[in-house]
Image 1 (tube, helix red, strand yellow):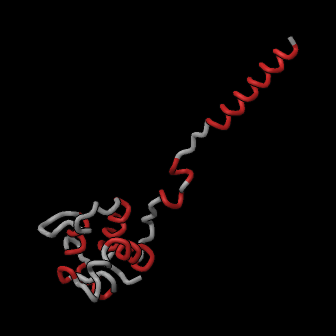
Image 2 (cartoon, rainbow, N blue to C red):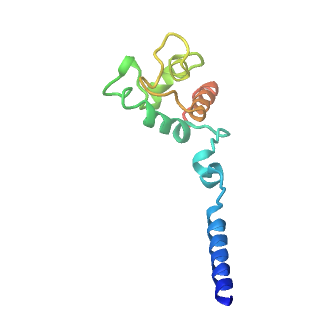
Image 3 (cartoon, rainbow, N blue to C red):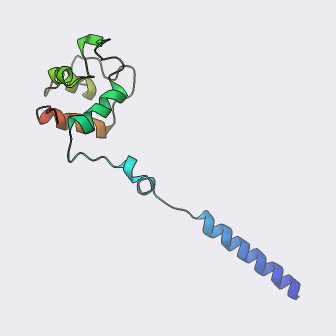
Length: 127
């Protein structure tokens, strides 16, 4: 009888330990805060816009290969197309007659679009 109770107790403790370690309900946004948060409070060219251009635009729109006559790898050239309703705005927001950018890829994330649009609305400053 004692052996039977010990086996039941061991099985119960084992079941409890599996249950407690198996119930792990963390939210992805809480686990990976840095990658899930879109900070658009302070949008700057160097900190916010350059990484977007490097990741999505510069491979086709650079000083060596200015696809469509647009260059995005320097501030001087990017600022020429960065105006409300201009080439950069229309291309990344998929509006107007321009080809949607990035070409043959998904639309930029809402976070990236917000950063670009906010930067353009601020006059595309070199900051």
